[in-house]
Amino acid sequence: MLERQMTMNVSGYSNLYDLIVPEDHFLRQVNGLMDFTFIYENLKDKYCHDNGRNAVHPIRMFKYLFLKTTYQLSDKDLVARARVDMSFKYFLELAPEDDVIDSSTLAHFRKQRVNDDDFLDFLIDKTVQVAYENKVLQSSTLIVDSTHTKSKYNHVTPQEVLRSRSKNLRKAVYAHDESMKKKMPSKPKEDTVEAEIEYTQKVMEVVESQSSLSSYPKVQESLNLLKETVEDDLEHLQLSQDPDAKVGHKSADSSFFGYKTHLGMSEERIITAATTTTGEKSDGKYLQSLIEKSKKSGMDVDTVIGDAAYSEKKNLIYANDHEVTLISRLNSSITHGTRKKDQTFEFNKDAGMYVCPAGHMATHKRKDSRKASGNKSERIRYFFDIDQCKTCPLREGCYQDGAKSKTYTVTIQSHQHQEQAEFQETEAFKEQARQRYKIEAKNSELKHRHGYDIASSSGLKGMELQAAMAIFTVNIKRILKLMEK
Image (cartoon, rainbow, N blue to C red; front, top):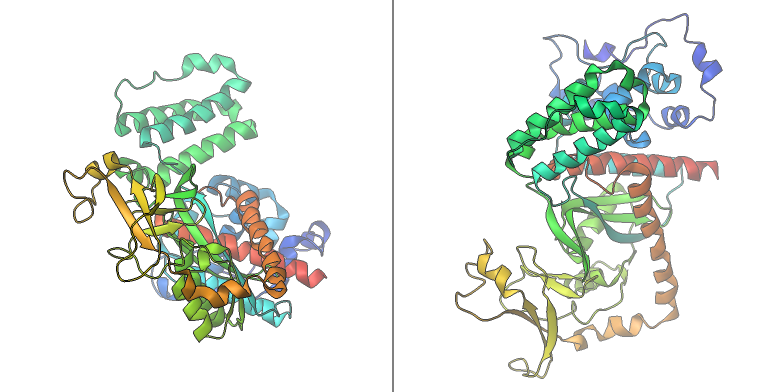
């Protein structure tokens, strides 16, 4: 029965844990902090309870994912370490002599068991609940921002992805044994995905045939990451480098290919809400969702702190209607009243430019000498690269054949925001705005300590799971830190 799989076997070696794993060890603290049965309750309906062979318990599988995120390991390296690291076995509730899973089981668990749309919200809500139970979350101020994650394919062709990864493996091998150059297969003559995959697999076979190389951690890690890429994403490589990833812009001169995670965080630096999107999405569009999700998790939100991206007119109206103080400085380009045509063009506050539905950013802008019809408000016209528009797959209804330019015009009506303009000059506004740095530090922690700078798999679904595990991990670590104080 599945329910019995999490029971530790009676072992004469269990007292080793008391000798080897200190009381203040991080993993021992995590086990003591929360009861992981909430994972079983969430996932039990995805298992057959009266037929087939015994499955690895979902709690244990989830703990494997937690370890993978915490220590930034590939599936294969995670399993290898769990086999010999007593702190890992203690956390997984295994007897010291128990064997561990096969790495392929973890890939199956990710793809088949934890693929629900609400898994990210579910994990965040649980950590917020734990924070409240331990009295370390008390503020009613929500700090909002977004962080970008590059696609693992980084807007390059599938061939280039495989070439880069196989090159890293070969370099690691040659650093230990330069004679291996003679044993490597010839590089493919055809410039196709199929040829590059075949070549990559041959390289891995050569390296695996040399058992002496496996003793070098750098070689083994490079090999494991390359194998995981090919095994997990072979179908994606044959179709597209990453079908869900989109081009986003960090500034007028800087862009990335991947995803965004929109975050809401309390002043205690506990993330209370998150939404993952493709990279081109505007930050301001997700303010209301972050507030509502934070309230649903149990937080009483009365103040929101964000940059100028969140000062759109509809957000000001929403904040006023829901008695929320919005600490967001006005930007004349995004606090307009009406736009030309529709709402599909998004404003990028970092670049100060609009982005079209296809992800192309305006090249320049200028104030329109003509007045907007019916009033005296100024207009700003944004110009797009006409050569991109001519070949754009979304040009129908947007670009008119034969046109010499493509522009997008917005009307500036800053008089509608006079109240916010006056508020942002007060000392109270400026004092609270200084707290925004906290979420930037949290974004840095996600990226540099938990691998959130690059997506670990293809597609928005994979990005959502990566977000769920990374945010769950940083929240647990933060709760433990606050409890120490």
